[in-house]
Length: 486
Image (cartoon, rainbow, N blue to C red):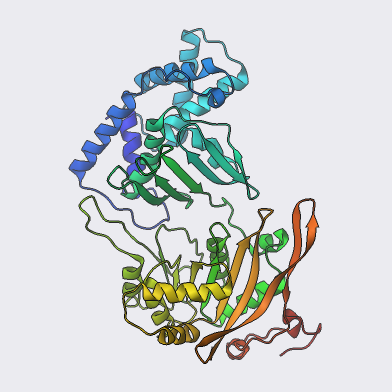
């Protein structure tokens, strides 16, 4: 078996080869079809041994157009000389062997490069063979939080909440498609003209979305939301000004007292990150079931069961939805159910679970405010297809949910907790809410929004439940004096 074939085989079957991914089960295909798939990938890589098309942007080659052609020639020769019997599970040894062959090829062809150019060319070639090509340096850059590929020539990144163009490009649409396939294949997912969009994840948990022509008119489009290599901590959130110590003390008490919590906000506002952090407050002796479209939550407790939805196969069968998993989780003896995101009729099943003994459950949803999140939940419950009156749905929401946390991304790109709101019950046909903490903007300094999440001074009704759990919060947490307790 050739080295490239073994590399692709290892990437497509890490969990089967004994390399732990920590990301839950991976769907595997039959051995015969897998062998054919690997053979086709090998043939496709071999076909790459041609000079790149004329007119390719030179940004990827460090501003020197000749380096791009040189990269193609050196890479093709390197692929031909690699030993097929090499054990590719030892990545460091494979990299060292590639480096030795690379130096020999440069010497044989009398190619003279500066030290910086030599290293840049080597890193690009290794990324093409073992990694995700031009995306590798972007994924390694810790200052980048999101990578956006809009076709082969337009790559953008997000730094500190602002979007900027990245100094890399792909060769062709086919080059982007190869990288997308390399991400999807290990997860048993597919993307082609018949199924032109798909969600996935990288081994480190980073969220991936891909959409390809004919739906994407600008070419294959790839969006990667990176996970921090070092997960954000409560201290970091407080240091960044995203939340206050008092608010996190209150959230910790709510989680430990088994209050049901909904984290709401817009795209990229930090919902999953915040859910990760508050889920760390769940006591270690409870059984937790997590349900997601793509496994992103990184709970540190020992007793965690991670479930992941599954799209239909090429025949349109085998789909497993979030709603299916929520229903199934009720038979798994959960103490708490954590759903990564509710976006359809699964909301009704989630409310039922919260109302039937699974207190302390959590989920996220897209909404513009705490009040809007209730309207969103109503709409999603109606999507379940049940002919329920609106009042019955609102009663379920008022009974099930205790706390709503609303996050937002402000104009300066910063992400902050804007509201922590308690659901207090029903008055007539209206669900009553009470803001416990509200973000107050005080000004703008050096294009940065200045403000603080301030307590409103209201005593939450869930304080009785919190105190029954043996947790006592000082009144100063809610902005009432400096000492004493409720």
